[in-house]
Length: 338
Image (cartoon, rainbow, N blue to C red; front, top):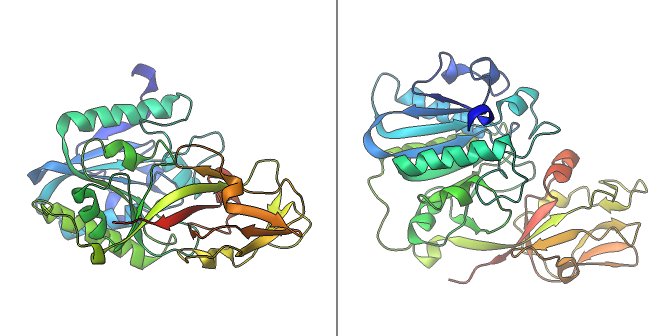
């Protein structure tokens, strides 16, 4: 990769790692880092943290786990990828001008750049060494339960997600996410640990890491149907760049309900109101699993009000306008038949 190398490879924790904050991590790791820690069992567990700089649950969880094994061998080797440390310093998902570090992995639609080359190099390394499982730890900005996201419905993936939560989301878009790339190497899951700064989410992720370090193998049979609430992401809802929006009726093109994030993981009926539309062009854009525009299948504007036109369950609805611009308003899901 030559000059495209954007990350460091370490074989021990830097001094102070167990006590640092996400904002101060740059003092120990000036750029992304892949940290290899040896343990009694192989292959290793892979954990990625801080792919979004304002989501510190992963760092807190790793610190908790490594403190409990201080002075002793890990039960299983562990590889940690510390992602966007520069955005973490600023307390932001990503810096202006940066790609999203959870959209740069193999299979991405992002234009080729140094970060996509970095992600490809990391996956190539991990493919050579082999992995037991992969977890990518995130927070979100809306009111959401703790849940796991998978990209394959194989038994091992379902068991891995179920170790974290009975609420499991299967998705195939967006592309370029860590879990989708790592799913080609091992069972992989994305953990959604609630809002940043929530100790319960951090502890929950730490419990899963500890369980996986000690797990010998996944069961040979799939989880019982009644043990999982399995959902399928059918659309990503975005607001067009040229559409102004707010959470108050201030004359913006789209004035969303200020309590809209309370609708997360609620099975909504057709006719559910999302807000007021002051422009006929304010209809949100809905991208389907296969990349098509299906906006009119899910939303309509009638008498200046924005309505859902079919049953759906949203996740990750947020009131954070920066996150909405950088990512999306929400995802739409349906129950997945098993």
